[in-house]
Structures are given as structure tokens and as C-alpha cells.
Image (cartoon, rainbow, N blue to C red):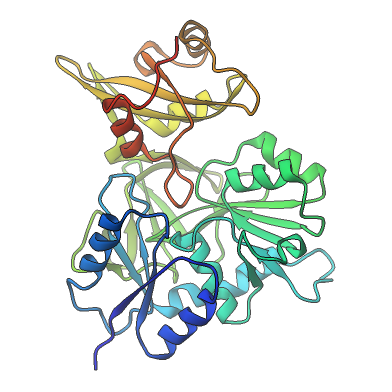
Length: 374
């Protein structure tokens, strides 16, 4: 009998046991988010049942959905299991004093970031602690996004936290410094649902994850490792392969072993005669005073292709800067073609993995659901 994808609710209660049961039956679990609207649940279930599942598939996750179109990523058991030893070493406390590690997982289980740690727990990794767990305060490690780390530090309610494994989106240097000043060792990483772990940063830049090989080909990052996914359910999707190498289309540079990722080529904004990579502008905006985060998008505009716009999320407690102040600040960071021309107030919408959700931000702007900065 062939295996099938079993779509599970994202409620934390008994989730680990449900995952274990699905895997024991030889089926492939895919965890949803209880906050999804009914129509999205229907779409995911229909997609999961639409194609046969390869025999070697063991886990299924959804892509982050920045394009607005969900895709199911399939991976073998080994593609995650081969990284468990390296991840366990990263999470270990100095001196190996952990009697029993408890790992706080703030992101929804629908995120591949959290599902990885649940799979690790089934194989003997740290015991998972979901946000509403009674033993939250006992967490010794954290696997989450920069936003989750910031919230944990602000709450100050994890007295035993010693290590944070941070992925999903850009980690501000100031956030790393704050965590480390409180005795929390921070390891950030770059990866993707299709690639799993690619590179680690312990404070001196992103370098290849153990077992991963990196190459830059015509400006794009290609990865060869034992952690790559099998592909998408029912089709090739946007990922490209060449032999045993894979690329998700991220533009990047690799200098002296340090990887710098600049964003997806297909997310580029074409404005007049310039090509603008949103990730690069977002990184610059995050350095401006009073700005916690930003998402950059292209507003379709006759004659020039798109107008560069930005949605700004101010630092907690800070007022939203005026459009005039933002234009003045942007002029100190960007060339004319890369400066946002229209500014909107946040908060920045995010995917389940913590990345800025550009498709949702554009939808909100076009629907008039967000305010322009005055």
C-alpha cells in the first residue's frame, strides 16, 4: 500500500504523539496552522491528495508562501536525520551540563523550522516546549525567528535559556549582542524549506553548515549536501537542480568562506532602468534609527514597471517616522533608484517561518488596509 500525506491540525496538545503515529504507519505528516481560514485548509488538503507520494518521502512541509501560492515540499527521513548530530552539538551547553534539554518552539508547527525540531525530538533530540506549555519557563534552548528571540528577551521569563538557534529571517547585530550580554549564546543560520541547513553564523559571518558545499554560479547560490529535499509534490516547482546540486534562486556572494545572501532573483523589482533586490533595501532600512523591521515591495506603475515602496515597523514604543524623515534617512543609505518613494505603516506581515510576506504586504497596500506615512 502506498503512503499518503496526512494533514494534521497545528494544536500543540498531543502533536508529537500524532506525528509519531503517522510516521509509524508509513505515512507522511504535514502540519497545518489552526489560524488558517477554512478555504486555505481546503486548498492544502486538496493539494496533498492531488498526486502520488514517492516511497522515500517521510516529511512534508509547505513553502513559506511569499508568492501567495502554497507548495508542498517532500523530504526523506535521512535528509533531516543526517543533520541531527550537528544540530545537537550546536545546542549543547558549554561544558555539556544539560541533564535534559527543553527546546522552546515559538513558531507554528506548520513552519518547517518547528517541524524539524519536532522530528529531532522523535529521534531523541531536545524535548519540545510549545508556547502554551506549562513548562515554558524550563526551556534551556530556543529554536525560532529573530522576532521570537526579541520577544523572549523582552519578556525575561526564561531563566534557564542558554542557547538560541535562529533562522527564518535576518538577525540584527544588536539583537545578537543583547542576547549574548544576557548569557544566551546565539547561532543563526541561513536555510530554506527545500535546502534545510545551508550556513551557520556564530558571530563571524555565515559559513557552510557541516556537510554542505556552496558555490556561486552567475550570481546565484547552489548547494550540495545530504540535507536537500526530494522536491515538490507533483512537479519540479521553482527549485532548479544540476546533478546533485540544488538552487532556490537566491542571489549571493561567497568571499573567504563567508556567505552573504542578497535575496531571490524572482523577487527583484524592475523600476525604470534599475533592478532593485528587496532584501538589500530591507537590510539598509533596518539600520535606520527607530525602525525594527521593513518590507519592500514594487507597486505596479505604468511607464516604469513598478514604484519602490516600503512598509515600516517602528521599534517598540517608538512613533512611526514621517514620510519626510524617512526620505531623508533613505537618502543617506541608498542610490536614487533604490530609495522607496512611498512609505506605509506596519506591522510587517510575516510568513510562518518569520520572513517578510511581500505578497501579503502588497495585497494590504492595494486593498487600502494600511496607512501611508504622513
